[in-house]
Image (cartoon, rainbow, N blue to C red):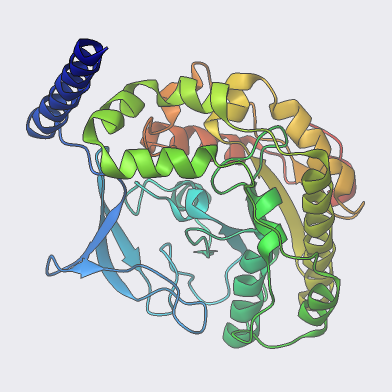
Length: 350
């Protein structure tokens, strides 16, 4: 028995030493940063977050990660280029996909689209936002800049069959109206109807994954090569009650979007944007149908799951999960091919 204990201890020590050797060796041979960092024009660490008034810190920055090193320019007004020339014809609203994480200024799908159309646009995309907070940002700029666009396009990152980082359906559960924006009728109604706050991810798999990737370079290497498969296979599914709450919270924001369009006299359009795993799983059509089921009849809902060719993994950063340059270009091409229909002509069509 004593010998068994000694042998077990030796095995555990050997495994630990072997892991440490592999871990430190991986950091020398193929170091991978655990996330994205920003630096300013002088090379100093920067935080590219919203200021008190929902405007980004103006200036030029670099987004640096294992898969990219991209220039980011924020306009004097506090949003990412392209800069609106007077009153923008189209405003792009969304999260980090719309903002263009990992992409240079001219590689974002907003920049590609507006250049091709030769029109004045504004990209109000910001990292880490859900539909509700995106509408706060939109409302602020419409009110403060006195913009009166012809169209406002929201790009909603959604997946109905799984919890994943940035899923707007579940991000909307945690929305709490803030004093940062003017309290208009639309925002007051959203405040009164907002669903109770709940954690967007009751399953701990994502938090465990984040902790492992933050601490182990060897794990990051494995994730770098296997991320598309892992995302598709192991994204945890939400329970039914949480999903119903997420839909109710999101439906409130859709109605708010339409109310803002009436107030500011623009045509609202909602693009359903899919994470990589939704396309790999083949569940994108299901996601689209779920989103359409809660959208008001006057809101144009546009499918985008045919925007990304097969194999879809070539159009997303494997580790980071956002569009790469090829993905943004393919997505912009899809936008350019869309007919400029009236809302009643497009709802319910692919």
